[in-house]
Length: 219
Image 1: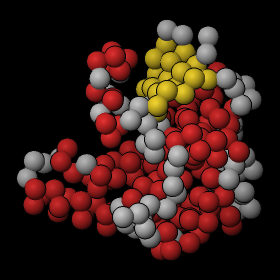
Image 2: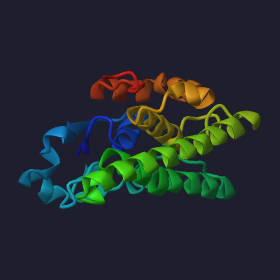
Image 3: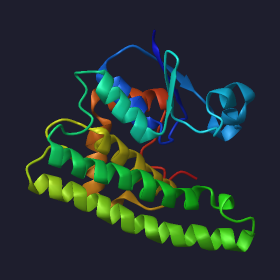
């Protein structure tokens, strides 16, 4: 049975979307227009009551959350390389992966959807402004990871093969530009994510989602 992936263009679901394309396997991509609220429609809520993407369906199994889907796909397909196999390197990679998901992603939500955290308009602006400064700091840390990997002679964040961390880095940098953080502030990181975007599987996902990497100049 063909795998199904529910995704929203530009959302964190881009990570498993690009990883599935990287695997060069058959799967059914199902796009939800999040800006139109399609994730709240009854048919999708039956699949994921949280109304969130990504969702991977494999037969009767339904898996949500970026990290869980990544680990499931890696275990299912022997040719997958999403994280290092060496125990120590894998633990450190998972550490960064979790930080991307639970810290950078969460900070961006305070920028993109401050109304989720308060219904007070003035407070929403304060939350957003403070989160932008936090996110800029996180991008500095992410750029340091890229710098460290280069100094160790690694082509990608975890070695000589593109991984889940590289794809997530692209997503997080792109989100930064949506917060009007210029890529010029992070030249090493920006150059890196542009190279990630050129990887065949990643590029196919970008084309399907019709993504623009730099959103800082979009009016």
